[in-house]
Image 1 (cartoon, one colour):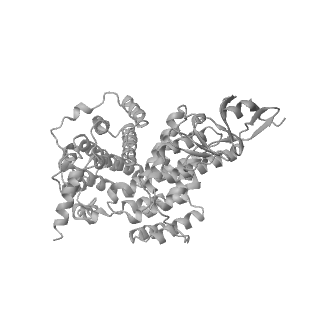
Image 2: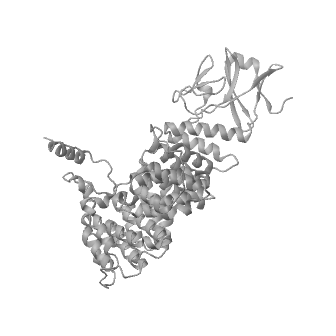
Image 3: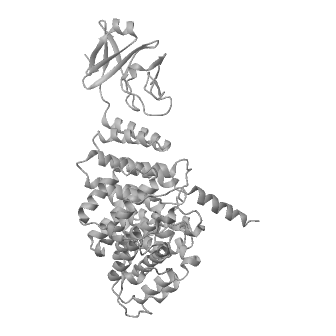
Length: 524
């Protein structure tokens, strides 16, 4: 007798009733008498587990009556494009129906699940991605292969390069590494990562990178990014990696390009840091696509120091070290200062050690976060430039974390990093209220607070990936800065605590309509 065959039900009973269920080992098998012969499949619908014995049968098409999913019993294919139904070979022997239950080789099973995960990815079906990843995790092998594959599915569909999806994935995988005994938490890390990528590239076309490669030179690379020449910059990245260079060899040039301007509200430097961390966790197999996506984002980044609001940044950078007044740095001196005055104040401190200035600026940005006047979220009488919300304030912490990490590696970049932190402090200061009681948000036990905060991330309850990305990035950055001893008086943890426990308004219908009406009225 061929291995794996199990006697299921008497043929006479199946022919009389048309369907039956047999428990074979740990499986419930549904059997159906169809015009094309006897068919066997898992009794539980792969969607949400409804018993398929209760489904409707039309020839060989079985419909799950709960959500109307339809399966072809000849091969288990899903007529609506969802999860496949597993079917089994059947034989009739001596008046009984026998079913062969043999799991396919793991290599084939992994390939099948990865294909199904790809379908779920392209449909942006979060629940199906969770099921496919749970199936993949049951097999031997590395579950991070699914994230590596998702990077390949998405990196050349991001029109303007790296998004929050890759940055947040670096942080989710940091938690994945530390939750080895919690399979549920690890699955969340995978699904949140891949789900965000899927959401960001949904219905996006391919935006191919150039195939040419040229030799890499750091100064030339930075210059091509400055010229916004994506093709030349990407060709240098290809040439670098073809010659054996790795991400750490390119990281200084990428950091220089990211800090060449007050770029993209700090995203550029954050993305440089997070891309490096993501490559470190996933390996060199994804180094090229991730670095190409990062390069594209640097090329297309908004150069915000070229708008009037930040026009004093360039002159402040030119004055660094030349207008030092010898005053002792103090976080209180930055409170309420606009961008220009914040820049002038920090230039006046430029003779102090960079790490001291960093601490002052970090805590100034944390103080701003702790005292954000969140009434701005509900006001509808604001001009466009005052559309300031919680997520804007979180960047003061996440950008600071990137400055400490990257400028610590490349000390010549400290002046740019510190002055851009001053830009954050001055930009957010007008939207703070010094009379707010920040003490109510201070935490007595910071270790316990951050442990609880990480636990909360695993059930964050946010529908938008952009929000959950800011939650995890800010939480882990705040935790890291606190652990590094950079938070004075617990201000960083207190600011995070207030953010996590405050209302977050995301859609501003009346404000948006009022601003639209005011805007178009100027067209005449």
